[in-house]
Image (tube, rainbow, N blue to C red; front, side, top):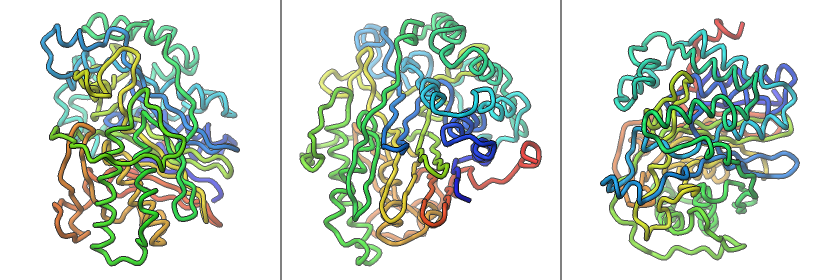
Length: 483
């Protein structure tokens, strides 16, 4: 196979592959896979969430389609209402403008098939239903923050999940255009629901939102050019970490020394992350000029977030993309009659005016989403969910591929460590027990803390790797939809 798709759910993967089998390009596959993920993994992403991507299409470029804070979202509002921090759930956590659909507009302008064709499978999965994975069923049972509109869709779901209102919204986007989300009938429904439930987004916020197309951050690692998203994405963290790892002969180290080296260099990269990734930052022209300053990270705990990443190659174009509602289903605030679950990404802001990531209207929060492309002896298309640990997942996989010569499947499946620290605090280092490390905290193997990664390598063969920690290896329902 000279093209491939790797996502964290088999129905999404098959939808993306089908788009290319019908003659579509990587952007068609992106639209098909991305829209399918909204349906089959609502606990990881949704129409109310964000997207970041790194793309090779003659040249390299990045998409930042994360939302900024609504005009009404400001520190004074929360202070006057006696909030010491931004709520994690509910309508006062859902003030970050959804960016996913705006990113689809960028892809649609470069695709070869119509939106109706690319959304065909997603609409089918939503209206006819599918068998939810074990992880999705567990997530539904454990999510206690949903409003009535959310619970009407998801509660008491076990063997079969239909999302008819979501299917209708996808049909509307296909029929009336993706812009209807921001300027048309869908925007009006979001506006009305926000007013009814005490939320802060208004139609004016939606109309004014635009995604960004940006130059990637680039670093050379042992002959590979590594491209990732610039701030507000935390991709820079992986770049400066790889920059520093160039000084070590990792391939020549024994097991414990190898991991000790990865971890000790990680702390400096995370210090740079805390101080240099925020909306409005001015980075030096050369990332070699970024140095850790040793400041204390504090002791605030991190919230693990749920996300879904995917990789696409059509024989020419490479796409690494990732989309999310932040914490699981997001805010638990669903827009009535639409199936849109609003993100709670804005809760990553702080109300501390002295912090660089403090809340302001039209400001974007520090963002955990990042995507990776690498070019050297082979090309690597890589991404992972995992919130604050995403740089760690990507760097560990890249090192296994580049330093240790693993293939993509083994590099993704191999046991990992995680340091789940937010930009506001520190954390312990955990490792999957099979890794057998000293000094750190063991956890069970195939642990969700370690993220779920997907990737493709392009050499004489095009190979895909899917993480056994996620749903991507489940092979069910193929015969129902893909005969």
